Amino acid sequence: ILNVEQSPQSLHVQEGDSTNFTCSFPSSNFYALHWYRWETAKSPEALFVMTLNGDEKKKGRISATLNTKEGYSYLYIKGSQPEDSATYLCAPHAGGGADGLTFGKGTHLIIQP
Amino acid sequence: DAGITQSPRHKVTETGTPVTLRCHQTENHRYMYWYRQDPGHGLRLIHYSYGVKDTDKGEVSDGYSVSRSKTEDFLLTLESATSSQTSVYFCAINPTGSYEQYFGPGTRLTVT
Image (cartoon, rainbow over the protein chains, first blue to last red):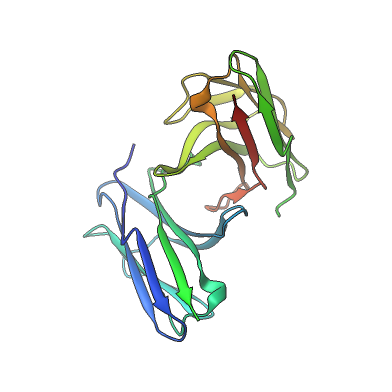
């Protein structure tokens, strides 16, 4: 079982502001890192899968970076909108194959109009 | 929605009764997973399957069993439900060759 830390646990951001949060994970035996977006009463939705040190991924106003040597990933949201309110989960994946994921407890983001 | 359905979507049952949750997929994916979601714990892996009759335990497998007799169905059974198994249960699939997992709509189970 991987030790996955996400910070902060919750975050209130004013609409229009940019924000970021962190996922920390063991750097040994790294295979991939997943970011998911999870709205209340819905199922988690895949945002990014990142595999290489220095990877950067972008989808609209959301982007992510990966540092496998030091074991962290940042998720950035630019110009936050109310629809960005959700819990953001990260899940590092150690080893190959298609084993199940170990998720962090998430960052709960609330965008205030 | 990656062609995943879960049934039932909601269930209330009594302590000590057996319960089976079903995950059904329409796209012949090899890998399937069961997670539970609890406040303060996030999503935790219960069991997973890498093919028909091939299953393995996850982080929180105690009190649960699974079966996969057909590619399209992955069943999660609580042999004797307890109140600690009150949770939302998510099924997920991993399309062969893809890193990503896609989640079903979830089943809310309440054990009274």
